[in-house]
Length: 73
Image (cartoon, rainbow, N blue to C red; front, side, top):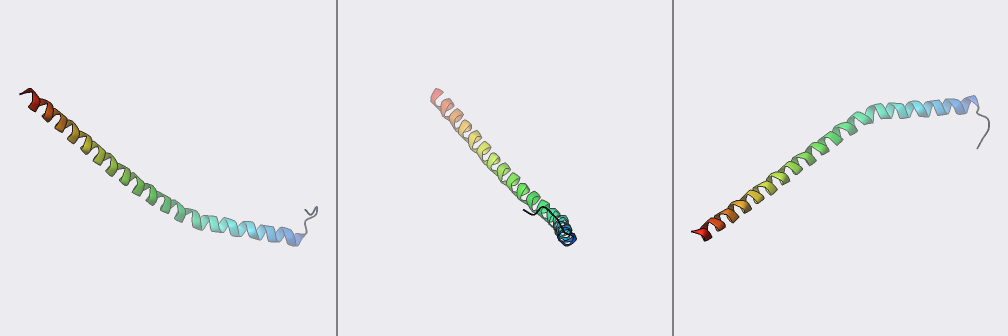
């Protein structure tokens, strides 16, 4: 590793940092939008699964109750 920095090297580093800062300002909003879209999709899928499981459980309980009532009569 060099112990001294020339003005040219400092200018190059400053330019690279400016480029990275510009890229981050442009790319982060797009990334945030994509992530929000994916989370919304995942949330919708989880809600659909929850509804399906709930409907299955209710159907099972109704069937069990009907079976118990039929055997009692």
